[in-house]
Image (cartoon, one colour):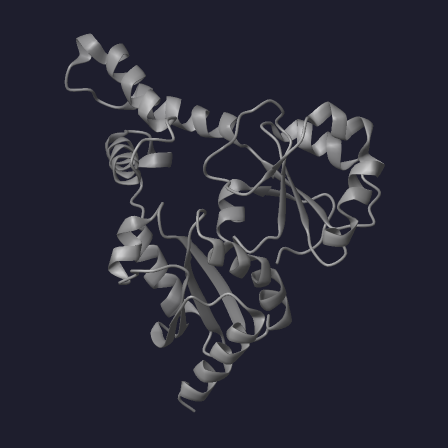
Length: 270
């Protein structure tokens, strides 16, 4: 869980690093939705500005023990909105959004050394279309991004970056010896996954001194799912210092999470 602080701003990457954050409000207005932020609740920004008190009251039960993340396309909009909240609840802001994403992609497209400079503009349009189309296969999306990042002369992007698999392995291995990492492969169109995700904020908070929860979207990260032999979701695996102790498929209750925690603790070396 993020620490409650009414003036703190979080980047989208920081939010995605901890997908157990409980409630996300998409305040960009209109029908647009960022596919990288699933499960957000959409509201029209001016309406929230005009009825902040009613807005807080509506989510009072959730906000009693859970943080509220406000997701806006521009940082100054979200910062201004924060000042209208009562301060009675932990409210935070995600800055950036699709505007930041498109800005970064535009820079990469302009800096990329194209094989056919005469048709550079047409190629850029095709690539940008693929990168903003939800129907683009995840593998294709990842290949495009990888190529752009690896070939740009801009040192901000050109630096070597670990693959998702390498980053996950490093995270599992680098965890403190007294922390169990619950690695959860989940998905959007999965009823059991939906039920399980509802319990994760409670689980992460209740056992915060013993566990860390890491959630991976098995459909968006198909390569990772294959690497970890995920054939059904939700699948929960428990690691200590990079060593897998337990694996369970189909978990969807608090009791099941507690039982898995007990089993992993029993399997842990002294």
